[in-house]
Amino acid sequence: MSIIARDWALAQSLAPGPKFVLVVLADAADDQGVCWPRISTVAGKVGVSTRTVQRSIQYLVQRKLVTVEARLRPDGSSSSNLYRLRLKEGVKLSPPPDKLTPFPDATVTHPRHQCHGEGDTGVTPLTERRTEREPPPGEPMPNVEPDIPDRGGGNVIDLHYPKDLLPSERVRSETMIRGLGSPLDQQVLDEWAAIIAAGDIRASPLGCLRALIKNAREGKFTPERGLRIAQARLAKRRTEAQVTQLPELAPADPNNPLVQRVQQMASRQGKG
Image 1 (cartoon, helix red, strand yellow):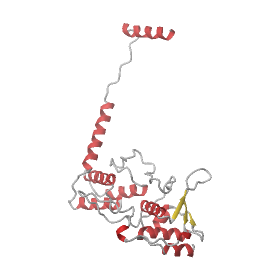
Image 2 (cartoon, helix red, strand yellow):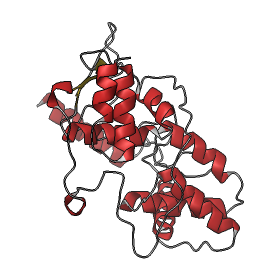
Image 3 (cartoon, helix red, strand yellow):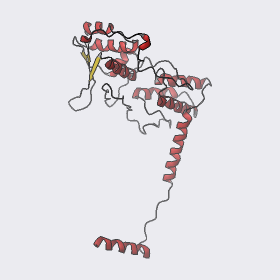
Image 4 (spheres, one colour):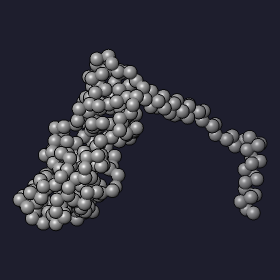
């Protein structure tokens, strides 16, 4: 722990989320501002999801408070990123409130279907079998799922989940949706997927799902955008069923005169 780095981080004028992440990084840094904690470790200390930590770090990079460098193990696999706090940059004062750029977590809510939901706090990081590569700044966050078949429609109890879930979000969503019966559980998941695809998450993906489940239990849930996802999935199933039901062609009869004629023509062309 570096007192110099921590005092520097505390002096920055930032929104609570990014500032807390910066303080946690500073708490792990040396007097030169260098550290390499895992995203899941930072998320556990801050009490938010790994996705929120990634967005906060990208925001800090944009503010030129932090630089990020990818690290590799001797076997070539990805390790945690190396972070350099720009201690010599001094204190970054925020512009007046009316000129502030919204923090990346503040997304626009769709006017027809507002999914508020409480924030995804108190997340306990899960241990994955494979290493997640932590994205450098400016690179889109990866959509990683641990050994889940049929990406974009995972088959856990025949339910289809949104494509862009982090591993921890996928596991928690499976637990949360178990309280609903069929077909309401799939309708809620489809509505959730449509809201995520439209970028209309105000708090967090899991907070949105929690709000949809609450409405469903209270009889206030009405499928809207999720209907399109369900219809597209049904159309895909019908197409696949039609392909599998196509009759197989019978083998050619070698005694058929027409077959013999075609074989003779092919043989002549091959000699030519």
